[in-house]
Image (tube, rainbow, N blue to C red; front, side, top):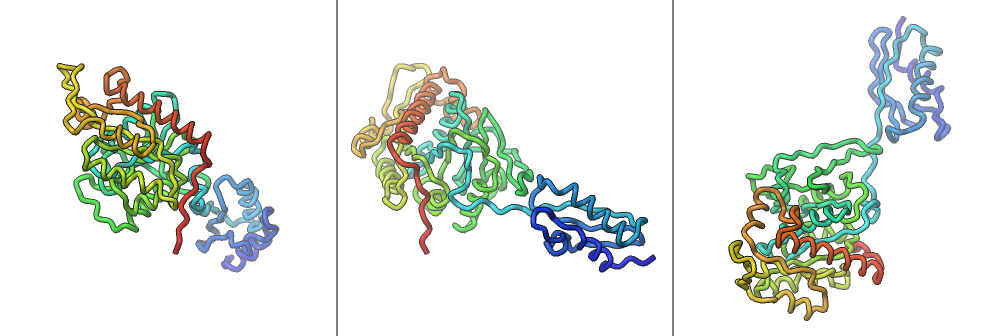
Length: 366
């Protein structure tokens, strides 16, 4: 007996899909991979999602139709394919995330990533569900700070979409572009490529339900910041600076970027990092090596809260390099500083949410 493709397709055209009333050939549910070998017939059926309730019944009906209209002896092999659902449109990303906090600095070298990492750890220690996105595309440091340089996140199909599963450490969901690039090679990307990579880490990742989604942003003001405010409704920004005048000048630019009437992201407050140096053997002594209370004065001038002052101690650097953020031990002097910072961020976020309307994403004008 000879079996022809038309015989098979005519048989399948008698099977109707309950969702639309069309037959499965007309509805283009039969993949173009029909194979016939003697009495063995194989092909794929396409469904919108793996949880489609009609999959089993349609497969049985397709087999029955071939046996009824072609021959009972035909051996039928049917594979199931699902269409990858598109990424949700901008504005509908991260529906389970309550607060998005951008940790920013006007310039590099002021400890922004250290503050972001320890803030995330401290929030998790307080019992919140926390995510940390290393959005510093060109200089990702979170993998080292969390001792996850060898981490390689995998993708999982969820509701018809291939989703990146964040790596979990210290009770925090973490993603970084550093997980996907060679750490020994410079990341040479044009702005558009970097922005697309960032959008994937946001929109194509399974972040789930979070109380706080902390963004470690690149220093300065750049395309990446524009991508973030065009992609996510950022609840508020935390600006990190050292007390020295050159850092404060750049911190002002960062504050102005978020307060721009087109961006309009509230400033939750400032963090004075490297506020003073305290030697381990003289824990009561404070040496103001970068100037005294410069960020505190800037906060007063800009009429925004001073969220915390973090001292310089040797253990911050050592623990950062070891991948054990200082906030893991909330009893050390610096650990306590980060716990106080996290508590201040929570207070200011709650205050912001009570007194101000939700942030809107920045509309892209062409």
